[in-house]
Length: 225
Image (cartoon, rainbow, N blue to C red):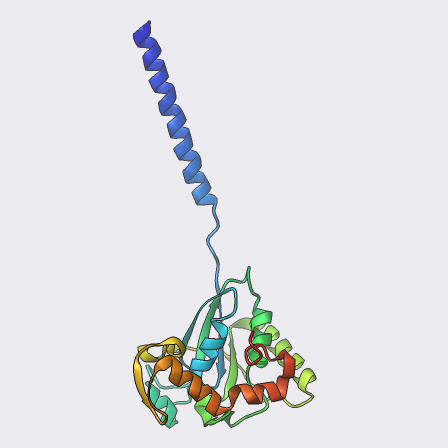
């Protein structure tokens, strides 16, 4: 009887352990994965756009790159020289449970000069123009609504086009997270770390000054979002 009792106890323990493992696997299977969305925008220098949007809660990452043109696998030199049709753009991956597409679109329009058709701030030329890239009618409608709100807020025509999303080509590695890089680079101000060079460039280019002039207190990044 003692042996039988021990066997029953062991069997019961195994059943309890098995049930616990099953519940654990079921709970793990039931845990929803984070479903992310992507917003691609062009707002002049992609270093600045990347820097701005990586500060937004709910944004998972922002990648600098090129899109909107015809050249396959373009390089920075090709795009900046002109003729490829590409914009300097940023692909923003975000968690829609934490920040909505509409919010990001509103932030975007208020972080650029959407009245300027020739580039942005000190950066001139087609590759520095603004644009919003969309997939499908829902995204197009949301982008159009944000554009309309920007026009109403400024009381000026908005020249930022809403374009069909095409292939996005990530920029060279040295462009990614440039705003916080520690590599030594040579600038017109002398040799500096990337992060310091970026700050000097942004200030000298007049980005934040112009955005504040346009948007005032509603400029999210120039005002310290």
